[in-house]
Image (cartoon, rainbow, N blue to C red; front, side):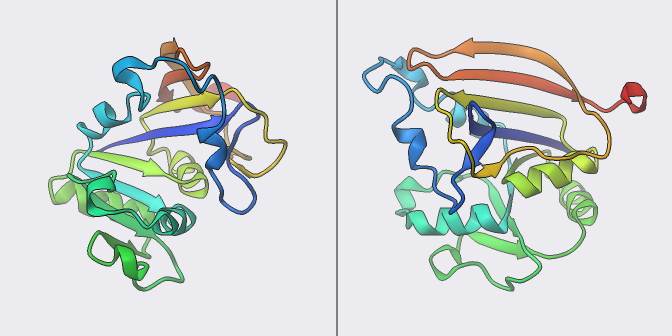
Length: 191
């Protein structure tokens, strides 16, 4: 099963403020820029290729805090799984939309694969780092926001081994955001 990352970060590599806030995404860059049909940075096009979403507990809680209407739900055609060792049920406002998994990631991915799922969207800093550590991420789309937060929740941290990225595409949006698409290559000879 293909596992992909599609996430925005600040220029200094943070995906959220210390308290999980992502409001800075709405104020970064040129707010008056004409984004045309790419206002979402390609997210909806990406989601058309995804049949399941795997997110960490922190991301699940941030999503719950948005209190979205059914029309605003960003994953209408995908099974959504929240990873947590402490939550047994999703937040009440997501109970019909999300399920909780607490087992090993490899087992979850294998079960999804056996059930016929082909493409997972992996979201959340700790979850992405765990999937990278297990060599499960095959490609990443990182959108760099033109803002420096100076602290917060990092996308990356220490990895047991280097992870080689092969650039597939780089795009600059009219609002000043830069999107980088990479293929992930796991090679043991990188040091």
